[in-house]
Length: 139
Image 1 (cartoon, helix red, strand yellow):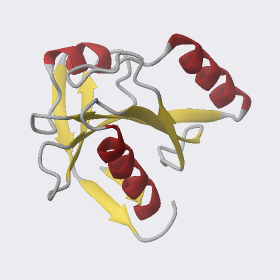
Image 2 (tube, one colour; image 1 turned 60 degrees about the horizontal axis):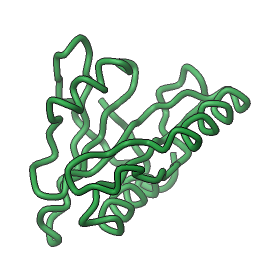
Image 3 (cartoon, rainbow, N blue to C red; image 1 turned 135 degrees about the vertical axis):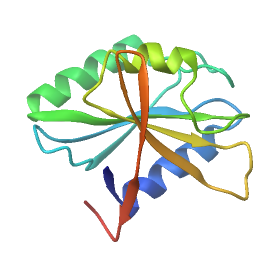
C-alpha cells in the first residue's frame, strides 16, 4: 500500500495537469528505509513528449547525489499519461523493473474533470496494483 500525504498527492496531480499535453515526471523521496514519501521533486521531461518521459541526465545525477547526501530513498517514481488510462505501458514496465523497491505512480490527464491516480509495484516484468491511501496534511 502507498500512504501519501494530501500535499504530495496534490503536488503530483498539479504537476501532471500543468505539463499536459506533455507527460510530467518526477520522484518523491523519503527517509532511507522508511517507505514514506515526503519530499516532492518534480523533474523535467527531457523528451517533452505526450507519449514518453525521460529524466534529463544531469538533473537525475544531481538528484541521486542529493538523495545520498540526505540519507534518503526514492520512494515514488511518478509520471502522467496524457491520453490513456493510468496503467503502466510496456516501456514503463521495462523501466519499473529496474526499481522494484519504488512505488510507480501514474496520473492520467486525459480527462481534465477526473483525477485518475494509481500506484503499482513493478518487479521482473510483473505489474501489481496497490491501494493508495491519501492522508490528511503532510507525511
